[in-house]
Image (cartoon, rainbow, N blue to C red):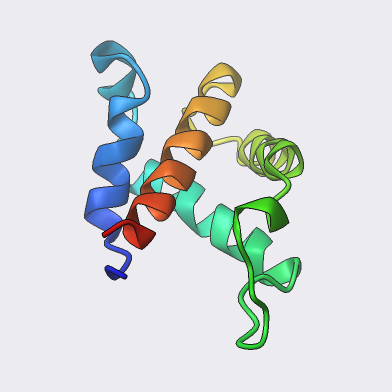
Length: 101
């Protein structure tokens, strides 16, 4: 299993949206989404050492809703609501790719 690399995750997220939209968001904005995802994992107990988390454990609908809620609370965030789902799904696909050999 490969280690999580924030720069690679950000690259993956950028490919999920158009180049035009990608230019609207700096790396810090995308890193903020990654942080929100991992905070949600922590809140759900998915980061516990004894948790045998797999893809089925992640409620993607709830995760996307949570990220959207947190982004909308951040009045300084330029991330558009319609971009939340493709960005989150791209980050999740990146995570899944780490398990692939």
